[in-house]
Amino acid sequence: MKNAFAIVTFAGLLAACAPPALAQAPLDAPAAGDKLPNVALTKELLYVLMRSEIEFRAGNWQAPYMTLMAAAQQTRDPRLAQRAGEMAQAARQPEQALAAIRLWRELAPDSEPAAQYHLAFMILSGDLAEAEPILRKRLADAAPAERGVALFQAQQLLVRATDKAAGVAMLERLAAPYAGTLEAHVVLAQSAQARGATELALKEARAALALKPDSELAVLTLAQVTENDAAMAALLAQFLAANPKASEVRAAHARLLINRKQFDLARKEFQLLLKDQPDDLNTLYALGILSLQLNDQAGGEKYFLRFADLLAASPDNERDGSKVYVLLSQLAEERGDLKGAMRWLEKVGDGERGAWFNAQLKRAQLIGKQGDTAGARQLLAGVDAAQPSEQAQLVLAEGQILRDAGQQEQAYALMQEGVARFPANPDLLYDFALLAEKTGRVDVMEKTLREVMVQAPDNHHAYNALGYSLAERNIRLPEALALIDKALKMAPGDPFIMDSMGWVHYRLGNLDEAEKLLRAAYALRSDPEIAVHLGEVLWHKGKKPDALKLWREARAKDPKNDTLKNTLARLQQRL
Image (tube, rainbow, N blue to C red):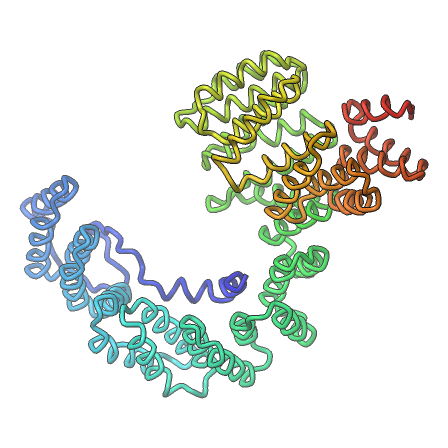
């Protein structure tokens, strides 16, 4: 969390601090700030350039490098020196790269990219003595309004120094003439934090905030170096009370609240941010996710729809809406709108392979849910899957489609073949185990789940599944309790594991503990299975009206729920 809001504040500054990537520039395109000589692109020069590129792409860097360096000295064209530097850098030859960059700097003394690269390479190569006067002059020459950025640039460059102590000492010398500025205190605070000098970091950050109590940069720096989350939250809340329009601090506060799992308060902060920037996609996305976390599906869908509308109105190559489309599809599916769910999935482009691939699997599952099992399997058969992991996912998806269609034995045969093909895929093994239990093969289920535990010891689902199965069959209850307890320690707060723990306590006769756990699980996730279990516990505690109410809620959400049907039949009840 500590870096989450620092990035928000310093993103623009830090982007300016890093040396720009060496970009290949054609001879007729001047690099920024370069004053170019009048060089005719003769046939001979063109041949030299083309031959150098061909040789370099063939894996030979030295000859092209030397050719371009000679041509740069002869023509005085800085672009040739720049390209020579690129070649040396790609070949991981720092000394030759630095020589080329020095020549580039000599030929284009006003080029900011050349200056940045010159400094970066000097610092990386440990030549701080050569870099210090250049940095000092840049700071002195900077206009007062730009000096802060120059200080941040110096800090970011010096962070890369191999001799960390020398880099810190140099930063302190560079900042000393500007000790009365907020930016100097901020860079020194960050530098101190980076090397673990917490007290010094706090001292510098507090000094920055004292200079300008309404500075977002200063308070975020102080928050960043504050170790205690509670103190950090109090600091940001106090600042926001005095500066309610401080959007970056509010965003940082919201992220801190998320980190502390205070989702309702975090959502309120993002809602305030949205009032000032109603079209901010990041805020809309955060609000959508938080709403779902708070079981407010309608609210989440509202924010995601707004996100999708804005993205459709102003397409952004840097912004992929796939995650939002998938979430909108899930929400549509939950309310039974399978066609709507399909429409959202069709919007998922192939820009991100993983998102597109998963969308195809989900499309097939939705087609199957609409009764077209053959069409669903046909779609999967047409999905290109070169990697074994993707091939295993196709088996999983097809198996689920067959299960949804009630074709349990066909699904078992398919999954059994899949496990034979991909025996080291824990996800496939896990699903196969659950299907084995569903078809009455409990010995296969237990053997397979234990194999999952061997392959993926941190897979809490496997421990929970085996523990729940034992509890459901009312056998080996102490072992079931131990397995579920292990799963819950791996994933504390997981409502489904809490449900399992409640159920095993019910089987052990601990009705009060069972009720407490199941109520907590149902508060986190109003799932029909949890409702059925909680209802049975309440039924046996004599709270029959409460039990009936929960069962009706479960039936409304999932009328075909097998656990509900079995429970009502066993207790000889009708709703």
